[in-house]
Amino acid sequence: MINNSDATIPKGFWEKLAKPFFVLAPMADVTDASFRQVIARYPRHGEPGGGPDVFWTEFVAADGLMSPGREVLRYDLLYTEHERPIVAQLFGSNPEKMEGAARLCAELGFDGIDINMGCPDRSIEKQCAGAAMMKDPARAREIIRAAHRGAPALPISVKTRIGYNKNEIATWIPELLAENIAALTIHCRTRKEMSKVPARWEHVREVVELRDKLGSETLILGNGDVKDIEDAKEKVRQTGCDGVMLGRAIFGNPWLFDQNKKEVSAEEKLNVLVEHTKLYEELLGKVKSFAIVKKHYKAYVNGFDGAAELRERLMLAANATEVEHIVEAFRKSPQAN
Image 1: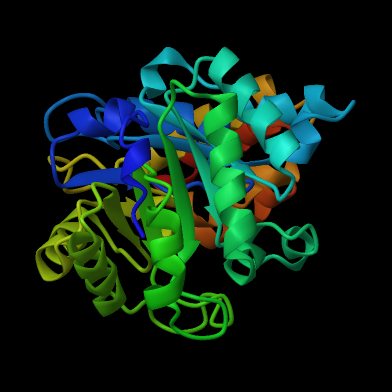
Image 2: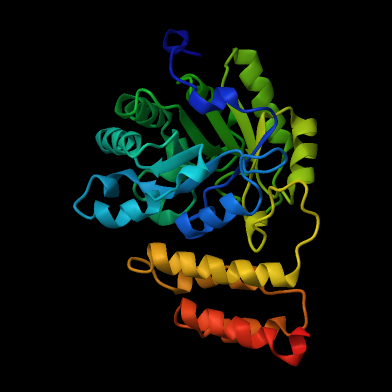
């Protein structure tokens, strides 16, 4: 099924990555511009033993980027040069809108485009996007081709699951590989399972073996329940995948991708909490609720005396200035000494 006539489709930065590579998952209302800037700094991104090797934006609606309200959505596409290579993740089911959104991402200077074909959110599926793509392989392939038309010089990748209600690797994955995408990330659960069952990494090996059997050059990344970089390395050894995507493990630990950083102190976490909050307010405060950044506080503030009380006070803060004052007051309190 592999379409060798399209073998000239660009692989871009993907060809230059040393294997195995470790990348940051796109997570809605988590991996926004402020958090990515923090992550780009602390795990020594771009240095030996640092990372992540690739950044993703949060997923963004292709339809929205082509609508009159696109200026607000473009805040989701903010990035800095220090985050390269950086991939814009899009979702949508309208080929014309996907082509236009891909063109916009190319104009904005992104290094690649990823299409979300695995999100189980019902509001996304109602748009025939995300996980709903698994029900319509023909449309999925047209969406990939539309992205290529919009950004012919950029590598296109896909993030998906092993199937909708059951394992559909044998039928679903060849459809994607036939479009010669540069990379394919497999979240090793079905849409039906959401994240309610443990990720089954044997299915990543199944995808790798299928890729090899079909003679595809698409890079395969595994995703799901990865604890840290050592765990990611072990999963590479078990499955033969080219890279691993880490998601929830980044909460409260921007140093996750630094292979030399073994311990993180409470003081370091509090410093980053304040820095992260200030960045969020500076970059996104005009268009997003301050409550969004607070979802990180539980992860930043735990495991030390007085953490629960400090968290309670931080959750009542209305802005970054109040957060900084609360943290400074805690540092001067007997609990912190």
